[in-house]
Image (cartoon, rainbow, N blue to C red; front, side, top):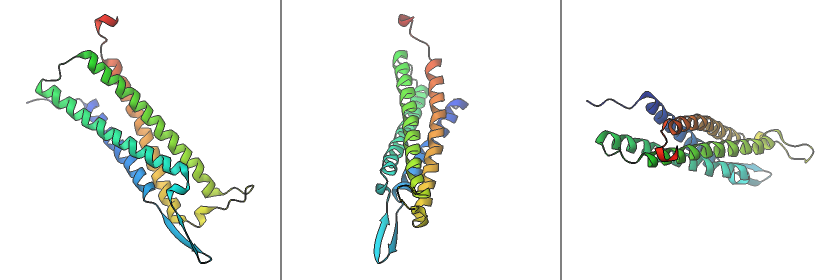
Amino acid sequence: MAAGPPSSVRAERVLRAACAAMAAAGALLLGFSAQTKTVLFIQKKAVPKDVQALWVLIVAAAAAAAYHVAQLARCFCMERLAITGGGGGCRRLGRAVACASFLLDKGCAYMVFATTVAALQACFVGLLGVDALQWSKLCNIYTRFCEQAAAGMVCSLLAAAGMAVLSAFSARDLFRRPCSPEYR
């Protein structure tokens, strides 16, 4: 009977699945948040497209979720190849895949973190207002929208933190692979 994957591989899978779930939850919470209020017989609807940074975060979080689902599928396929004996191929290809995975994991973590922080900064204006510019506190009016946006940003921040840990897993995987003798 074949032994299961090492605990580090299982931990990476769980973390990838959690990152994909949190990024998808953040994108869905932000994407489907909307609230309509009537003020002086005029209906105004708050949607994420009103704040450009929220829209960018939705796209970035959705892309990150899709990337981590694809990486999770790659993890399962690589294990399947190793079990059936077809994975003993070229080491240089394995190192190239590990290098690409490391760079993409880092880029994904940075992208989600940067867009989440930008969205947080933009949403603080709606939360606190800016007296010098006479911008009112919009979260007093659109409470449900602001709460849903805050939950989406918390999910995105948790996903970004998990992605930072995943980039450490990718770095470990990359630097544990031996270099081919021709490059030494």
